[in-house]
Length: 203
Image 1 (spheres, rainbow, N blue to C red):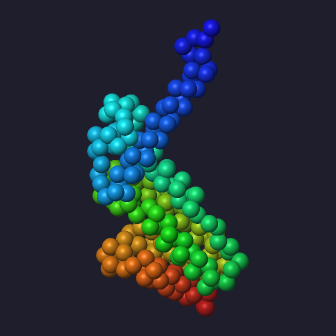
Image 2: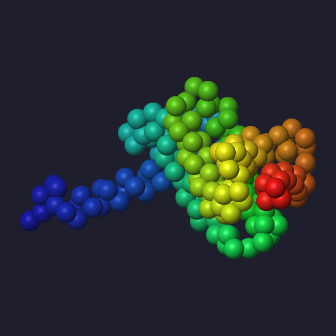
């Protein structure tokens, strides 16, 4: 005799709720990737195959949906990320780092463009961006630790410069502003990162 809250029934409800939330996030990101950079709740619900009421039952507002979608984008980046050995020569580290950054930035390009439009009025999208910045900063500090150690008082400024040239705004300028192809944009990034680090290592 199982009551309404029997473990199996509760687990089933939880699993269904998780599937629904995942479908909503997938629909949200799919619409963005197709060029709908400001998808409405109605469009998202329609794409997910649910009612608008179900959408707002699972997410109380767009901010909570932005949080879940942002987490999914980070998960996708983590799945695509490949560690780079900090023992490689500097030139090989710079090349591997910029190749990977180009690949990951292309991966997040649709969601980054969408976030850029709404971030001025969205605290959650700003928090999402800070998470990306923190991850890139961590990678820069680990991968280029030897060169950063030689920077002395200028270490923090060098970290900021490396992070800035590795993020979406710089990539967007190269790709969308200057109209460069992926390989051309990556070459510019590599030249910039290499120059910043070579300047320190040759002192």
